[in-house]
Every structure is written in C-alpha cells, then in structure tokens.
Image (cartoon, rainbow, N blue to C red; front, side, top):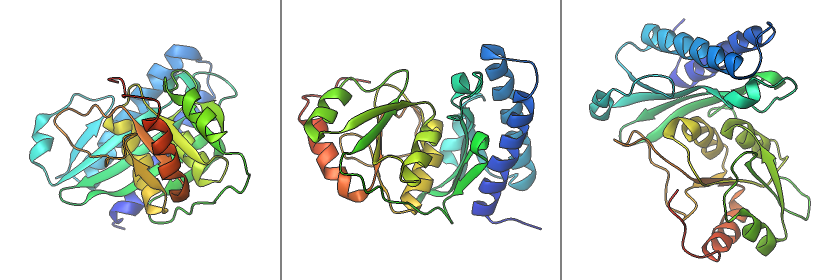
Length: 251
C-alpha cells in the first residue's frame, strides 16, 4: 500500500518511536543512550524515506546538510530524537520524534510528532487542539534554557512558566490543553520546529517567530532560533508582552 505524505509521516514517526522505546529498555543510560538513540532513529528514517520517497531530499539533525536540497521542491525535515537529554533520563516522557515535509511554495504540508513514552502520535491531518480553560495562563519554556525575557512576559500576563524538554513534547502539551502557549528563544534549528509547527498550525493554533513574523523552512542556513505556538487568542497578548521587554537579543 502506498501511503500519502501525511500517512507516511505519521507511520515513520510512530515506528521510529517504537525503536527508541525498545532501545531505552536496555541497560544504556545518559549521554550514551541518547547518542545511540539519535543514530538508530536517524538511520531508520533516512532508509525509510529513501525507500518510500526516493526522489525527495532530506534535512536531518543527525545527517550532513546537502545544499542540493535548496533546489528541490520536496524536502523532508526530520529530528530523529528531539529531547536527547530527556531520553537518556529514566522517568522522562518529554522526548519526541519529528517528521515533516516541506514543499516549495506551500511550506510544511505534512507533519507528525510522536511522543513514544506516552504512546502518542499527532499528525497534521488529524490533530485537534483542546483549549485550556483555567484563568491563569500557563506558558511552556525550555527546561534547560528558557528565553531571557520569559519572566518579564509571565509577569506582564500574570502567567505561570513551566519548564519542559523537547519542542515536540511542549507542542503536544499545548495541543492537549495542558498549557496555553509554548515560547522559545535562544537557539533552535529547522528540524526542532518544522514538525511541531506543521501539526500545530493544522490544528488551528498560532505559530510564528517571537517577533510575529512567519517561520520559514528549507533555508540555506537552517538556524531558526525562536518560536511561539499558542491558542490564537493568546498570540497578540504574548507578542505584545515580548515586545515590551525591549529589543530582542540575537539568539
């Protein structure tokens, strides 16, 4: 059976997650487990995409960047293991697999994020956003390197900041209604956000950079250091609060 792009992204994210879960059950821990997991998932995804879509280009966190992708009309942007540090720590569920397809003139058209420790896969064709109803906003940030302006934004909005690993895990938490927004600045690459943004946007959430401009992919320099994912009604208050912290520092 030939899968559509959306179906393929979901199947590959799920299958890669199963491989990672199996590896995690072994005796490895910490950085070595993360290193092995990165490599295992990368090799699986690259081989599977070569079989299923042999004419498409691939941009992976774990692979060498081939500049020929810039001339291609279809590029798969993958993060084989997002949240490598968390993956190496027992008890953590905040790690994920990202698979996204970028198409020229259309942006991210298909995407899937798997959170294997929760046995969850969210795909752009089926994801549904649950709106959180609590009065006090909850904003997710990186557990290891939150934006420098995050405390000021939280104070301006009377919001709680919650640290969590993995861009994919934070995005799925917003989709599930466990938080109102995911705010990041300080260093990311296209593979960190392509699949989460594709899934979130398809579910009707706001996605942008922290200055409100669009997130663009398959660029010559894949560095894409910041983003905001949130329910649409929270976008302008958060963006206004970010602007109120002063000029954004280079990230």
